[in-house]
Length: 151
Image 1 (cartoon, one colour):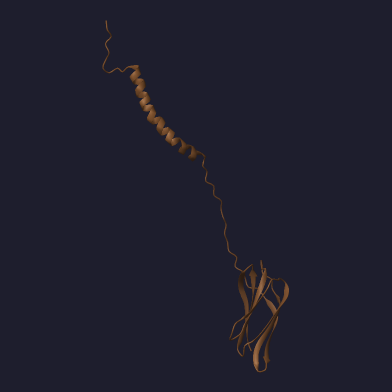
Image 2 (cartoon, one colour; image 1 turned 90 degrees about the vertical axis):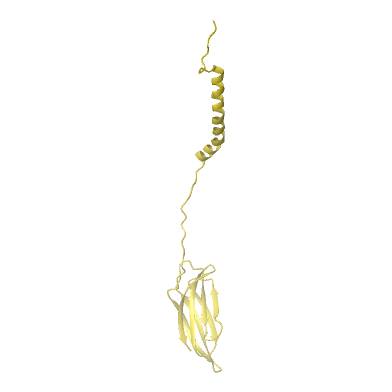
């Protein structure tokens, strides 16, 4: 007698083929996603705190010097000799400026700290002369200590 097969029963060969057909797309997806999963698992993003600040170069607290109003052949002018300037933290030098009432200012830079002399003289007529001294840090110039005098 012959065995009768039911219409719903599949042969073991068909079942194995269906499993293979289901496994292939699953294996393909796994192959495509595996590098991404491995990269995500071993990639670490590191960041460090960075502190940024500014330094405002202050004006010297004091400056000592001798200012003289001069008259030469009827022409008035001013002369100043800075003899000492209060030190400024981080200063690499100082800039002294003598500005006449008319004309260009006279500027003198010194790369010194402590006691030093900066002689300056200018003749520009009667009026208000402004003299100032400012600390320098490298090429940066800070706020000036400033005075005026009428000659």
